[in-house]
Amino acid sequence: MLLRHARATLERDGFVLLPRTMKWLAALPPTVRPIELGRRHAMVANFLCAYWPRPARMNRYMDELIADAPHKLRLLSSDVMHELFVLRLYYDVITPPPCGR
Image (cartoon, rainbow, N blue to C red; front, top):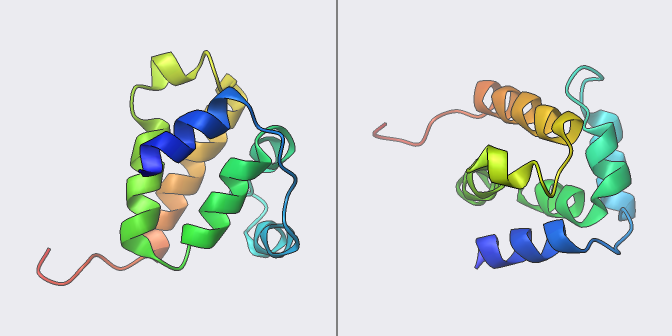
């Protein structure tokens, strides 16, 4: 289901950043803030904001966005992909691993 959302988003993104997404972006450290993602793919940024407090959901969505990066580069520019990689690394650092892992 998440992959379907991601694919549809990457193909045609006519959405705008939601107010809560703008607040979320502003709260991120400047070095990890995905500015180009927000400008070019607002719907993806909105999903990331919504999934941010839900690690299982966030990790699945990020995996789907980043998986098969060479193919995704046709849909997302290299600078947006770089922002996603940086944001993923940051998320992995600030999010504790699930119990039993």
